[in-house]
Length: 209
Image 1: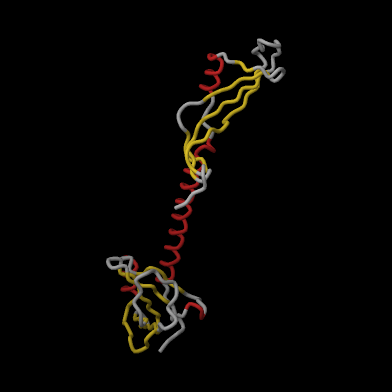
Image 2: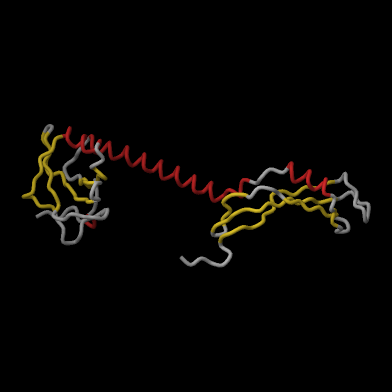
């Protein structure tokens, strides 16, 4: 994969700026120092991911611009400065995405459980066999008491499909008898990948032969 030059590696970022009015400048004797503390960090696509250990401070007189190279003073500022959280932006972003995906999955699972618990004629179940990564559709055609009749589609899919192919259809002669208990068991066994209700004609779920 081609990446722009410099889009990953290490960079140096300023993590803190201080003003010091107690330390006199050796050149102009002014008490007006500015201290900047820097830290190296790893980045990818220009997004900081995590900071490298150690910091570097610089000190300069605001009056005359003369740098102050007193190591003890610089080290004091390096030690007391905390690593800026933005240097972990990439990790924070990844963590937030993981949480978001988890929340969406939980919401989707609860909605699926709700639809399975209250089946309606016309519901389309995407049935999966995780062992061979195959999928097919079942369209509920009749519900009477605890008995559910469903039509199976004509194709077998080997990639996740959210709609049927244009030549696919539900075969009314291929009826499967289910019960409310059996579909709950299928749900518990993760055989029901998704449940669709209120779909439009573009999904192909209204094609019945």
